[in-house]
Length: 206
Image 1 (tube, one colour):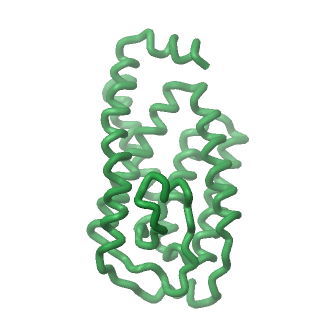
Image 2 (cartoon, one colour; image 1 turned 180 degrees about the horizontal axis):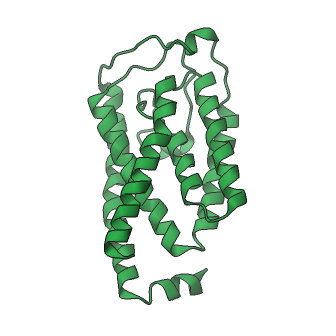
């Protein structure tokens, strides 16, 4: 792994890419937990989701976390051996997170009725420790897994990440963690972020 990164960073343009990636990523990572805490204090609006009214919520927390964190660790292990695509994935994630911040600010939502909260230990660790219920538009877990699908450099992994995206989407819907529109919107914003990152990389020949 180290020789791969050493070789990649031997070119000045790649060093610039590395630095710029973290310059835009780190402030977002610092700001996002504070923003999510702020979102929990705001009054939002709720609406009747036709799909969620068809069934009672089912607690799929451990299934969801299995897909989420196995997928996350697999993606990191895979991408870290591909410096160019690792940094590219971080850019895509950063832009997706910015879209989420904008979406949650301008479209504050109350949690769906009968929600079974998704108790995410990592999110609580980096935040205030409280369980979040209003980080809704759009689904961060679904969009992140779709980012892994878009950026994976292996066909088998692409198929696995796409399957995990669908599985996570179903989990958060069945658990009433998200409205249906939150889940359907997630891949759209992830793909838009992917194209923005692609345009930037092509522009600067990274």
